[in-house]
Length: 324
Image (cartoon, rainbow, N blue to C red):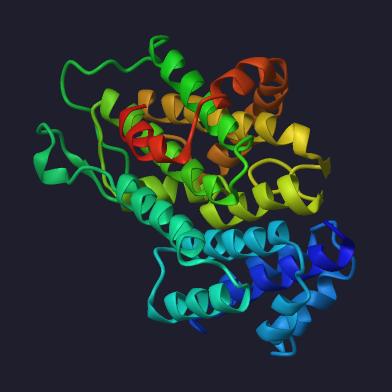
């Protein structure tokens, strides 16, 4: 893509992030920071244009002349909207208008939305009421003892599950569709859930989201970072759970996502095996320690990640998320 097209795609993605008007100040600040770190000329100015409503969609869409750029802009908009929660009415109207302005056919406009709907359904955790009787863990609650007979030490058998999930998450970086990024956080959520269950804790969605959020992970940040690496080029300044140091080239994306997911799984195993005694600060520090070596491991496993990506398609993702 040309620099002009990159700028247009970034403006559309930003417009999607703010199209519902319901963002809180922390959400706006997080999105702004993420986009300002993209290796796109005048990224900070682009954010300001959108916030000041000086980026009219018809004008931006008209500047995207290639089918590749138009399709990418729409997929990115869907990804950003869905990254912050399943789309609401305002966001649905925005995407419908955008599809018309980008001159997409109905099937082209419908496919990313269908994938997003399927992934949103797959992301849901089983209701607590249908689980075997162990005591539920409320978000932010003090540590509770697991059910009797549940192991209290890390189980090496879980390593295979953690590794396979991390490889699959890394493989999503290699798929051509940007909406593939929407599968990363559900994979991570179900991984934490399974690890907690293994050690006797019933985890609801709120608790898992809180655990992942403590580490600085979230779908919005991971989606935007993934898009930056794959399509726009990502200049990043933060380390660990957020943006990682250096210029994140496309080839490093699978290793980044593998490492983040693998470190998350290993830390979850340590946390629940130990009775949930680590503080938020200790969790963050432990994650920082784990993620660097895990990403290095991801680079070594790149051939295996590439092999996993071959033959993988988005239609398989919902089943893989539920069954990993």
